[in-house]
Amino acid sequence: MVGYSFRICKGCFGKRGGHLKFIHYLFIIVFCISLLALLFIDVIELWVTSLGMSRAIGPHGVVLPHSIPPTRSEEYLLMPSIHVCQRAEPYLIILVATAPHNRKARQAIRDTWGGEVQVRGHRVMTLFIVGQPSDPVIGKELIEESKERGDLIQGRFIDSYGNLTLKTLSMLGWARRFCPQAHYLAKVDDDVLFNPSALLQYLNLSFKTEENDLTELYLGRVHMQVAPDHNPASKHFMSETAYTGMVFPDYCSGTAYVLSRAALLKLSLAAVSIRLPRPLPPEDVFVGICAHTAGITPTHSPLFSGSLAVPYSRCCYQTMVSCFTCSLHYPRHVPFMIQFGCTKWAVMNRYAVLALLYYNL
Image 1 (cartoon, rainbow, N blue to C red):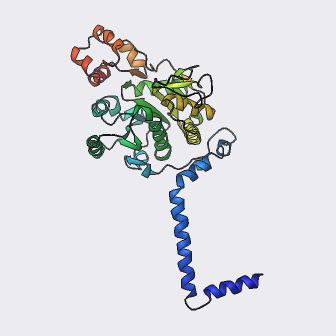
Image 2: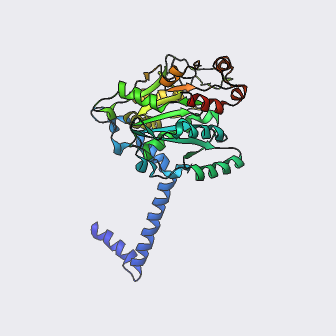
Image 3: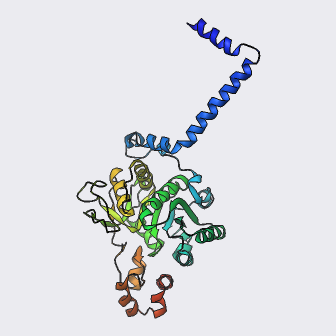
């Protein structure tokens, strides 16, 4: 049998020029395999991930680094240098979810709390994550802003309210791949007044341990026993087939929450293993489902306001980690603003309110 096979191979490649033919055919085969791998690499990654989280989790519940599916820089249209975290070595990285047209909000954050780079002896870095705008003019403006500021991350998805979950997936993937050395990740909306100093003080007082990096912390204002909204007219609509449970797992308000390094790794792994229904679940609900899948319990802190209105008090705001900012979009804030001296101009401009509150802390 072996001799017969040898004679066939000799007949094909043993003639003059047969060696060149063999190399030619081998090159074609390798090229085809490489092309198929490139075309189906996302499917391969998802399949490997879906084999089960148990293979990726060590004996003490720690995610094994080699088991994390890769995130490629090509998945982002805009992003800082891939070495940005290696150079800055942030202890806390803050990723702000923002809409492409909200340049004023981003600038207000840069000029206030987002401009802080050294807080309580720790390095802090703030970046912004956006999707693709429907308006090409805004798209060009984002490119210019990215060149000028170097702090934008743009995912390959249409930026809309319905795609906030995709924005969070991009955020988690980027942080996991390009900033795994950060001890904490804070996700913040661009209409939130965030206080990095209060957060780091709270973390040091409440969660400082010798094995702090192994603490699976998912921190924020926790919503409990929230039932799915089955009203098709609601922006939070989820069909009964998309989520069959009576209530969602407990989750932190999407306005602002914090993940430790260990929690980020486990939650990221869970996120890519969960099949996304259509329409997509609310962003904060999805993170809660991922945390539940990963075996992470959210930790409630009253220092996160969630979407609740907090009357302005300098003492209170110095202690709060996050406060929903005032604007005409939320009329319940206006009486408090007037009471505490906000001008009519400030009421008309929520970004001015952000600066006003920050500088009065």
